Amino acid sequence: MFTSIWEDLKREFSQGNMVTRIILANLFVFITIVVAKLVLGFPIAGSQSTIYDNVVEWLSLSSDWKEALMRPWTWITCMFLHEGLMHILWNMILLYFFGRIVGDLIGDQKVLPIYILGGLVAGLMYFISANLLGYGGGQPVYALGASGAVMAIVLTAGVVAPEYVVRLILLGDVRIKYIAAFLLLVDLIAIGNNQNTGGHFAHLGGAAFGWFFVYQLRNGVDYSIKFNSFFTKLGNLFRGKVNSGGSSSRAKSSKKKPKFTIIRGSGESTGEQAAPDVSHQEKLDTILDKIKVNGYDSLTKDEKEFLFDASNK
Image 1 (cartoon, rainbow, N blue to C red):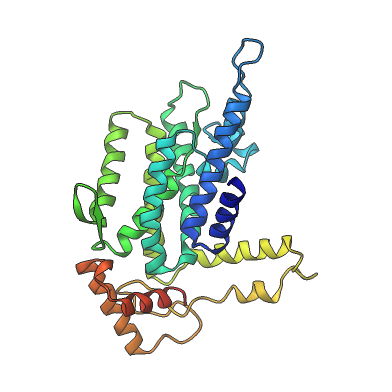
Image 2: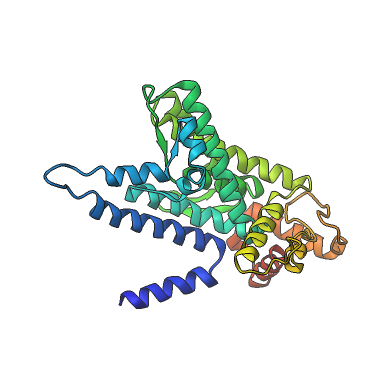
């Protein structure tokens, strides 16, 4: 049974979209942490073991500048690390719904860059606020969880398609701009009440990056291109495909910008190639307008296929 489950997960990771891969990565880390807590947290000679706590701190982002500099990996590992079931469940639900919207409307290849870069900005906001406000009683405090990175995804979706409608249990149809605004309000209220102040500052940092990413994208600056190019080169390096000059033909090809960016109202080419023909762009604009007014589910099968093909160009 477990072998079958493992094979299913591997297939989903290799064939699924980026949202699926990020969720599976978070779940893998969470299950590993749960098992580690059972093993490493077991009392030794009648005394509670501290090994598990030390491992979690080793993977979490510290507010102490020395630890943050000496453990650079924590800026990444902290955004995949969860301890509580409800913590990871809430984050993954938000990531699933809003990540799919981002992938459908501006391309699956932009989801991971927004997640990672948004998480880094969230971590930086946490670090700055912890040192300026001094919470923790002078002792290092640690940040973990995907919330900041997820908020970057949420705000990206909210800015790209504010009128996009999703159906919520008990509430019915709700435009995602209201969901994003509600989540921001919760963070502001929590900061005002001094509840998990550092965590909520991190959420605001991630949200700010999501807005900034779309703002720059509409102005022809796509940060996901350099991000994906870097990791393509890194992957080629580990696979031994990089030549003696430090580059490869595949890595060079990744520098090419897409023909256009699917953002309503931009109407500009963001790459070196020619912009698409007018009829194609008009059809795309019409579909995006329809989504804003009636939601994604109002699209016909052909319109959904057209939008999917356009987002992957």
